[in-house]
Image 1: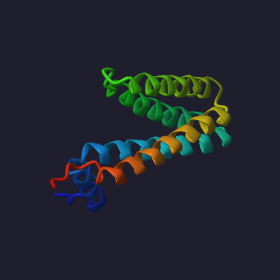
Image 2 (image 1 turned 90 degrees about the horizontal axis):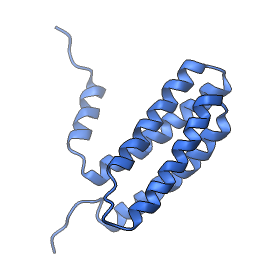
Image 3 (image 1 turned 135 degrees about the horizontal axis):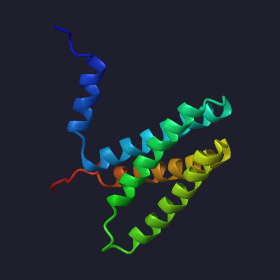
Image 4 (image 1 turned 45 degrees about the horizontal axis):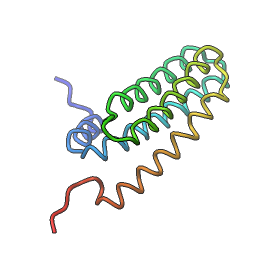
Length: 130
């Protein structure tokens, strides 16, 4: 009987115990990671690796779009940014030109950094009692 990998167990536990704000941050971090891998793969002409990682970024952006609550006006702005990133990802997928991924990466980092600031201001996204 194989023993479970300690890192896998840690990662699974981290996800299962994370607040919604922490999960959002993890998604931004994942999208950034996959975008970076995609850039290197494009530069190295590793078409399959580039394709796989661009698709992972697309899946995360799609998840962000699906989670938007359109009763708030700001959701339209986020939707526009996500649509723009998806257009760039589509171009990257078709051409394997890293410049499109670098554009997406710039936006992902900005959004991630802004999200971190929001988390600081809201006690890491967890409700606090006075």
